[in-house]
Length: 90
Image (tube, one colour):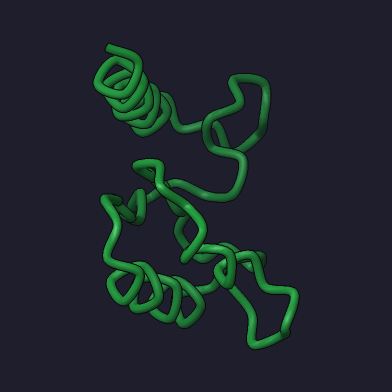
């Protein structure tokens, strides 16, 4: 999320899919302020979505060979995504 005219959140009105966003804690590429603005944009969009911060998980936490790998949070993220796929692909 940015205030630039090229920010990806601006395509939300064209999206019909259910969306899921798992954010890292203290992520320089998506700071808390940006997450809050993004969550407001998602709410205004009105589609089906979930957006959450993975406490204790830092950018790259789902990659098993990354120095910030967080196995419990990575497993939780994997479960969330498989649930989304299972519900969507029925």
